Length: 132
Image 1 (tube, one colour):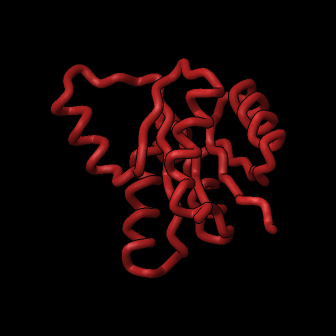
Image 2 (cartoon, rainbow, N blue to C red):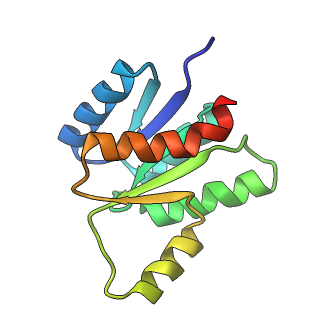
C-alpha cells in the first residue's frame, strides 16, 4: 500500500524538521514548502491526503492559500485533500476567529505551541474517512 502523502508548510525550520521526522516515523511521506507561493505550486502538482499549513507565511498567508486551494478543489481543478491550519495567532474574539476559519475553508485548526501527539490526533481525525 502506498504511504499517505502530506504537504507540510511552515517557515520555521525547527518546526518543519520536528514534524516531518515525526510523521515519517509514523509511515507518512512528507513534502515541505516554506512559503505560501511554493505551497500553492506543490499542492496543485502533488497528490496529498492532507496539507498541514501554517498561517503566518511569506509570499501568501495560510488563510489565503487554504481558500484558493479549496475553491480550486470545489471547481474540480485539483484533487481534493484536507487542510489543517496551524497558527500561533489567536484572534481577539470568537466571532472573528469563526469568520476567518470559515473564510479560509480549512478543515481543522491547531494552535501553536502544540504537542506532536495533539497534531497526530488532529491528523488522524482528518484522515479517518481516507483510511476506510
